[in-house]
Length: 195
Image (cartoon, rainbow, N blue to C red; front, side, top):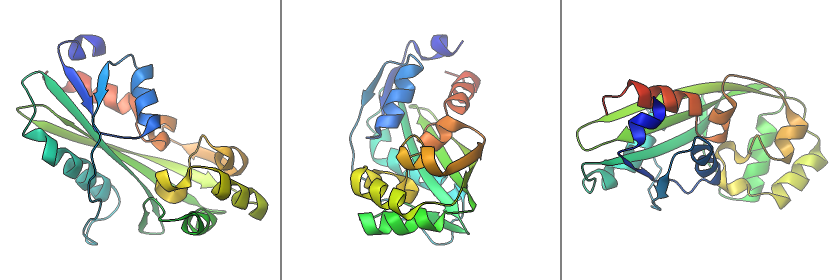
């Protein structure tokens, strides 16, 4: 059913995330990558999934007017929600170190929103996964923040990276969601849409 739904559409993914590219590719979806620079600021009044929903929609706004009849646009946003605060992408390696350190011995939510747009309508869905960090060895954290692409990740870490292997105790929910693209939710949403 999923393949039937998408076969007549040009799927456009407005994301530079290698993880999202890989996950969509693994689903067997043929897609074209659109690069764009978007101001990812948001109002302090927004909380939790309201933030990622808002940003996923915001990323679609400049592109919607150019959609053709058989185009399907995907925009996404992922945040780490910890102690009632959104952790975005760190500005530098020191900030990444402090961000990850703040997650030690506690749980946080990783929230990803997907905005799917066609000419006539738009659907926004989101998913939350609970991630539990163990204690984090200082040397492991220094090694990770100095050698990995920490500036490209919400909360400063990637679950698939070194720090995820050595410090994440367990997760409750979708693994692909923590990577930035909840595949099961995406498939269910496409299947439920009147395409």
